[in-house]
Length: 167
Image (cartoon, rainbow, N blue to C red; front, side, top):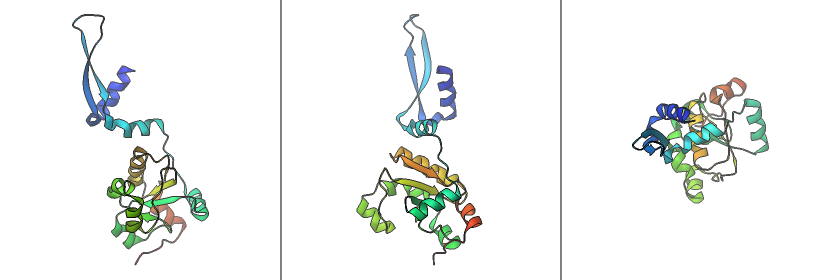
């Protein structure tokens, strides 16, 4: 376990803090090990929760049933230029943390919709799945429990549907 933890810490070096421990068996023998810092909770979620990926057909059904909050994490200019999945809330990836920590009133004023609660089914989407996966990890670290990634993103959606253009 110790060797595995050391390898993990090498790969995520910035979230690990060095710690010196005394073994107790041999006086003067110190073992240098690394332990995860409090910021490691993000990695904890990725290691214990399998990534929940949703496909086009599933997303289409959830949107039809209105049983999902779809968050598009592309930049506003991308949404304006290329369009959006109908019903998606546009919150650029860099704004996810402050948005999900707003008061419900402030969220509603800024995004013209109700703020998702921690038990809502959230699906994150972007162009091709990179930013949405990061946003999904952020939401998990903020306490959202039902989070999924539409990894095909807007590219996959447009392969099946015509996008809504925002003008």
